[in-house]
Structures are given as C-alpha cells and as structure tokens.
Length: 567
Image 1 (cartoon, one colour):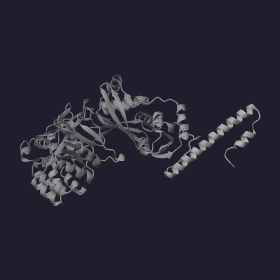
Image 2 (cartoon, rainbow, N blue to C red):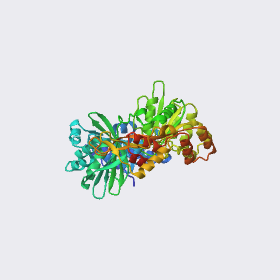
Image 3 (cartoon, rainbow, N blue to C red):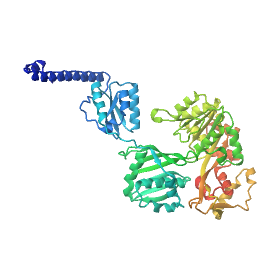
Image 4 (cartoon, rainbow, N blue to C red):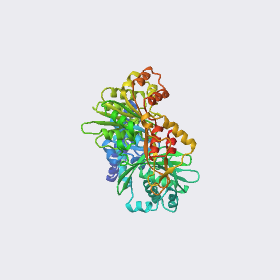
C-alpha cells in the first residue's frame, strides 16, 4: 500500500465547501510530503554514490548541547549542524561535503577532544534543525579570567610569612576564596607551578618553588568536585569529562597586569590531578648577562653566538632552563636588520621583533616541516625548540652550514653527551663536525637567600668531594682558590625567602666547543660521551659541578644544592 492517499480518494470526500477546503489542505500537505520524500530519496542516492553516510533529521531529537557545538551564525554560513554529541564523538550533517566542510569537521573534533563524523543531509532536513536554534536559551559566556584585586592580594599576602602558615588559612573558606588564596599565595611565594591533587583522604596542594615541590596544605576531600568544576569552567574545559586529560588557559587579571595560567587535568586513582603553570612573562625576560656565565665560559660563549652561522645547542633534562638560555641569547642577537624566526612547542614567552611559530603534530605541523618552511622565509637566525629526530637534525645542520645561526635544544645529561646523541639519530659525522659552534650543558640551582646568609660548616666527607672537583679545574681558575681556607654559605631561613633559605635560581654550566681533536673522533663515528668529556676537560672545559662549586664559593648557592642537581 502507498504511504500517501490517492488524489481520487481525496476528491471523493468533497461535497460541501468546508469539506472541499479540508480536502484541498490535505491535498497540499500530501503533495508537500511526496516532494519531501522525493528529495530525501535523491539525497540518500547521492550519498550512496559518494560513499557517504546519509541521515534524515526531520523529527530527530537534537539536544541543546549538540546545537551549541556550532554557533548559529557559523552553522547558517557553512550549512552545517551538529545533531549528536557525546564526550568522545560528535556527529555533523551538511548539504554538501567538500574539503572546507571536512576541515571544519576536523577542527570541531579537535576542539571538543572527540571523533567527528560527517553525514549528508537534504536542505529541508537541515532547515528543520536550523529552526531549533530559536528555542535555545541564551547563556552568558563564562569569562576565562580570574580577577584578583589589590585588596584581595593584600588580604591573603599580608600575614603569609612562610609556607607552614598557609594551611590554617585554607580552613573554613568557600571555593571561590580557596582558588583566590591558592593563586595569591603562589604569586607571593614565586611559585612556577600549582599542583592540586586528589588523594585517598584529602586534597594535596603543592607549590613548585625554584624547581622544588613543597607541600602547603591538605584540604577536605568533600571540596574536590566543586574545586575542579570551577577550575574547568574558568579554563573552558569540559566539566563532564573526567577520564581524559584536558588542557586549557586562564588569564589572571592583576593590578600590575595580566598573567597567563596554563591548566592541565589528568585522571588519577582518586580523582583528577590539576596542575596550573603560572607563565610569568616579565620574569622570563632574562638577559645574557643574568644567566650566570662567568670567566672563560662567558667569553667563549659570547664569541660563539656572535658568529654568523653554525649551531648552538643547549642540553639538560626537562626544567633545566634550556629554553630560557636560548631566549636570553636571542635577546642579545635581536637587533635591527636581523630576522629571527622561532619554532616552539608551545610558544610561552612572546618576544617583540621575533617571528614565533608553534608546532602542531595533530595537524602534521612538526618541527621538521616547520623548519623547512622557516628556511624559505629568509631568516638570519633560527631557533627550534627541540631536535627530536633525524629529519629535524639534518635540516638544522644544513641550515647551519648554509649561512644561518641555528639555536636548539637536545635531551642529554651533559654537553659531551650531545655528540653521541646526534650520531645515534643517524646524522652523518662529516656534516656534524663543521656545523657545531658550541654545546651548553646546564642545570638550575637555587640561589642562597642574601637576607639570611650565614657561613656553613661542611663535613669532612663532603669537603673531600669538593676539593677533588676543584683540583681538576683548569690552571687559570685553580690559581684563584685558597684551598687552605675554603668557606661555604647557606641561607638560615627568613621572611624574605619564606623560611626556605633560598630565593630564585641561577644556572650552572659547562661550555663545550669544537677543536681538531674532537672533529677527528667524530669522523670515526665511534664517539663515546666519556671520551669526548675527557678531551673537553683536557682542553680547559669547566664542568657543571665545578662551575656550581665556584658559585658556592662566591656565596651564590650551597654545596648541597650543587651536588643535588648534578649527581
């Protein structure tokens, strides 16, 4: 039987004028339905020809959350709507599936941390869903900013003399104030990262201060969900997703200016772990002279960065200040008439006069592909965030050999370890040797607080280790030391350093430069870290441990701190 009544059947029902009007109305509707069915059949046929999924959305229950995936203006402009959304999947429909629509679907999937599916739909079916936008309730957009007034800062900072005094202040305050207190106290203590972690019996709040994590408070577990929800709301993260990592940003609006906070969440056994990285753009404006290069190391590196071509590599573990060192070098080189381009992951510090680009592996924009593009931009100086693979290494080396100054980082434990690392990637030895200018090995040590510094008594065992290292110094440096009167210092702990004895950080370095002997070893392709280290020391390189101990003698840091980061 047909889905529709025949015209003859409808005409037989006539008789009176009223009946005639009713029949006419039914007839019009039936004709409309027939045409609609025909359009749906045509769209379905077209979808099969194009090997695309088809859907008829007339009467489909589209949720408000699904509609909000695409703003109405964009939906009408591109003829696309979202008719289904879940934490891990979104379904989209359009009247025409072209490259622009596919790209948009991909971007929406990335934005929502979900897999996107595209369906072909008829114009009438799409129009039906478009009309549903009119029924959406207006929701005021959530601000991605945290406003902290001068009064609030003073309120929480005035009595904050040390870390131990914080926990008492966290008690008996609401969620909004807890968040403000956490951020205000972190700023007071110059913390770089705020860790808020769910544990079995409570919420652990920890600050990373000068590279070391400190426990500052333990909050009731009942406050966890509300706290996480508020953070996610501010960082534009999905509140209903707690089984996947998420990343977002919040802006702190302070009386002194805005500060960006990078928010990262990750599922753990007892709930999500939240880490907030405070990006102090002002404090990162370190100059070359502020880095902590002394004596011959300073002169050696200064000479190498002024060369017009070649590679300068920084090495060290994560968090050792490699990128800060490269930025300090770039500030020295950033002059009128010089074009500098950087490729980073991510761009955290913005520099005026420098073209900065951020890699995106999900879009196939890698360090290697980005570096190829950079070289077509006619730069004088390039900075690549990290050399991770052979392709990136080869392009960087070719750039260094063809008149560019190339700055980058590589993950090794020492400067001498960089050469075997390059060779293990597959870099050709005859290209590596002439391309390298200098390799910088580095660590960060905490500075002794100048307000509470006092002489420290070193035990015999530790003193013997100190003398052993200092005895190996190059002759020029060793002559400056009175081995019979070695004095070291520490911070006792005061209000200025929050009772820690340390305030701020400084780098300890070893500068490795090329010479004929090392070039010959590289060309053999059988280079070991220990052999390179031995030759470098023989040629006058001051090691990181030695550099740190020299700084300890100059009251900059402590012996304990030097051994902590180097051994």
